[in-house]
Amino acid sequence: MRSWIEYKISTLVAFSIIFLIIIPAGFLIFKSWGNTMNAIEAETQITTSVGTKKITETEEEQIQKWIAAENLNQYGDPEETIYAGGTPLFNELTGEQIDLYDYILERHPDRPWKK
Image 1 (spheres, helix red, strand yellow):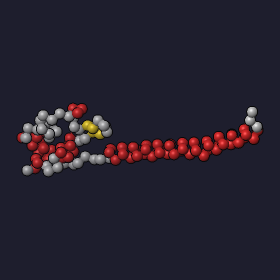
Image 2 (cartoon, one colour):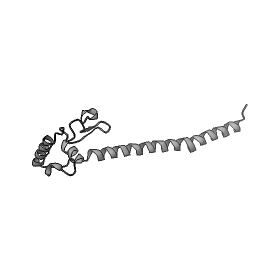
Image 3 (cartoon, helix red, strand yellow):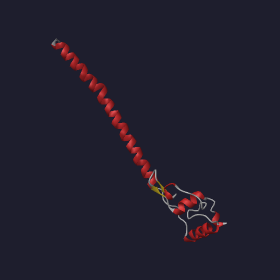
Image 4 (tube, helix red, strand yellow):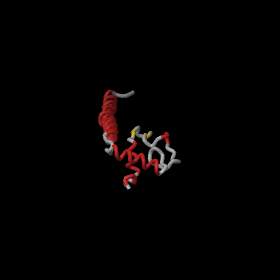
């Protein structure tokens, strides 16, 4: 049977372990989780703040004529191109929707319809 002093010492050791090791470790875990969530929120704000590239209606018409003349699909890619999800304008991983003309300008930065 334990003496009163042994009981007090073992209780003191147990509480010391809890307060010096377990509780600070818990705070570090939750703090790192909060940092992760803040990073995810910041990344989401960055991807949703990207605006569309502005082009004139005249350039839109030029693009459409170029697509028809070059026998390209509606996205300015070769006719036989197949897309995951059926369209290149939607990124299924990020949920981001891309404007048609942004997509065409990204794929053809040299603007071949102006030649």
